[in-house]
Length: 75
Image 1 (spheres, rainbow, N blue to C red):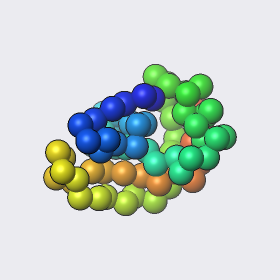
Image 2 (spheres, rainbow, N blue to C red):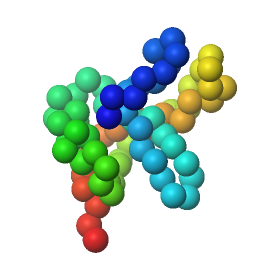
Image 3 (tube, rainbow, N blue to C red):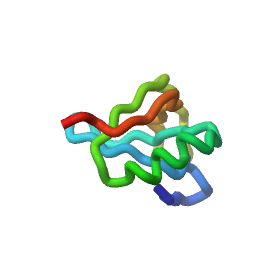
């Protein structure tokens, strides 16, 4: 949480994966999703949403997931 970028070109929340790199998470200003993201920061998660890549200025293609649900992953 709390990621910043030049020109404000970020959703502010990122998901780092082992297999496919980094994605931005669009929480849609949903307070429940924001609380969940904060509580799960640094932990393994399961994200359900829609992949919506967008063109960027600093980053040619921003890899964004519009989040529907965000939960901790089971071990």
